Length: 276
Image 1 (cartoon, one colour):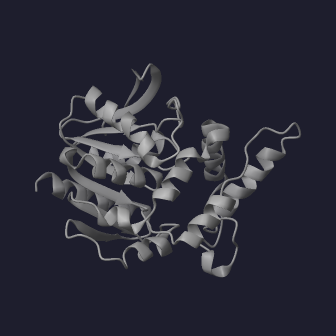
Image 2 (spheres, rainbow, N blue to C red; image 1 turned 180 degrees about the vertical axis):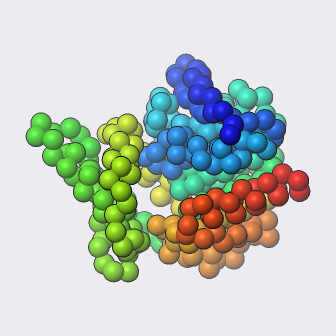
Image 3 (cartoon, rainbow, N blue to C red; image 1 turned 180 degrees about the horizontal axis):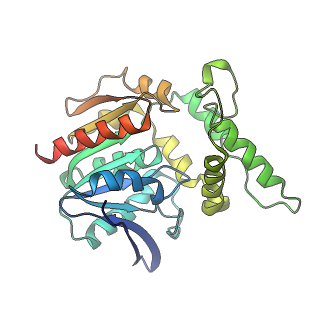
């Protein structure tokens, strides 16, 4: 099993962090919000025997500092990716992103198509404007500390609801994504990810929601795989994306709900693109 290295670097005069493993063509893995690159370790282990895999902490998450000024749009995070690519002396990269990471990957591929060997998108969707506006208004709770600790109670409740419904604040049957809560250890891990990201945890999350539009995928000009994960909490909105006419460079690959089978198919498909 490949050893995962943990690297601290300075970019823009600020500290940033990324995980690295393996040798071969450079493959970036971009994580969801409010998580960090640690969530990418299972994929790093699967792909590190074939690629040099880089999983950065997005600015403001994990061990990476925020950018100054803090971005308001997903494009505001692109200078960080570009500086990291330059730091690693890469001309072209394979690029994977999930959820917020998928929107960041799309934006980078639109801005720098000449640098993309292949793009892989996971948990990518399309939101109609009414849904987007509702999400932006209600999805993000305040994590400003309260003397009585009530912010922690609210956070725990929100995390539990988000494991059962999407969006978490709407408990209608049509929004249910699971029948029961995951083990408490997973709940606690999710809570900790929010706390690590801090009171500004929603910044990249919001930027991704603003970017989550079919037109962005329709503008892609690089070879692209969309993994249609049947266990995705946003499957309904992913399927909305797939109702749109997408360019010939985009291919959709179904993956089952079960995590092990899903990752196996992803590994196979990503490795095939290496030999294209």
